[in-house]
Figure 1 (cartoon, helix red, strand yellow):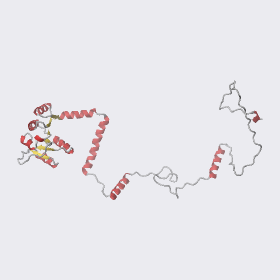
Figure 2 (figure 1 turned 180 degrees about the horizontal axis):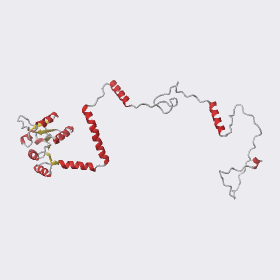
Figure 3 (figure 1 turned 45 degrees about the vertical axis):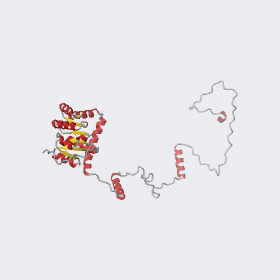
Figure 4 (figure 1 turned 180 degrees about the vertical axis):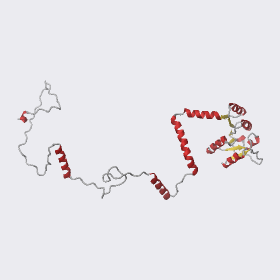
Length: 296
């Protein structure tokens, strides 16, 4: 049931504040925003349930109908910076606008309306700004339509994440202990849960050790290569390709020289004049001519 203004109420001590007339669906949203912004405000409400809901949030409440000049006086409209008329009834809203404008000609008055006629009526009584609910909803929808698909996807994803996190936030997240030792144990336990199982290296352990481990000298030692065995393998490969094998020459005991040393090639003097006839073009596929001395 509506409550009459309590005669024992005292005027508010706030100044430069915002007055919210009505703490219903619209007024409560405005109140939550002002609480987050730490903007001083109070509520004028004549319904007991809504007045108690505002008091439960720590909000100052002036009980009564804002259409009465005495109630607005208790709310100190003369010293307020703004008045938000959040009640849906256009007739009562118009009376509240009119009374607030009489007590404070400079105060900013914002009201709500549901039709163009209500908007015109409230502005004529002194409202500075009138928000038409259906118009704002339509503009909000147009704003979403005009966004690109990426922006719409981001909005949808944000809403989905918020819906998932809301129950967790209400239940309360588990806080880590303040003790450094307990904190280290909690972190280590959390890492065990999220770490993946190590599948091991791709090569045998004797060749490639696991990541972060040093090779074991007893099990991972690699045998030193045998020079004799390597030479034997090389010789076998050369014989497979019919390549003549040249034995290693011992520098300390050189082999005796068999036969005479090959004669030195004669030095051909360079001509004093340039050639008058073109030479034979070089063809890499044709072997060079063999001197007659070698043929002999």
